[in-house]
View 1: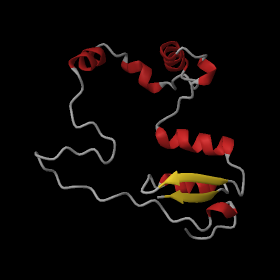
View 2: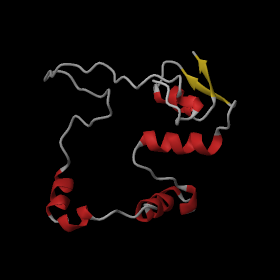
View 3: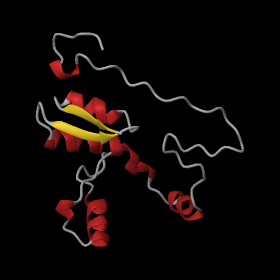
Length: 132
């Protein structure tokens, strides 16, 4: 990454994310490498979306994800304050590292693994430690 006088020192040496190789379309191949569902939505989902209030798309959703957190808490039999919701695993990983990693802390992760672990660890000043 190019040096920028305004960026954090912790990100100066990071490389830009490079997505993995994508397979060519093949009807005999089930593609799972980017967490995409290879199957169409269930008929129940399709039916639910028919009644969806399109007007809701122009407004922000609940920033606390209260309905989701309350339902997850109910299913898991925990307090809703123990449930963290985010916009995908990348955001959740960033929140976790931001909350728990101080500069110089070691963050242990398995290899091979998701490349974002190393990137986020370095962004927050941590030291990545590989475990084969």
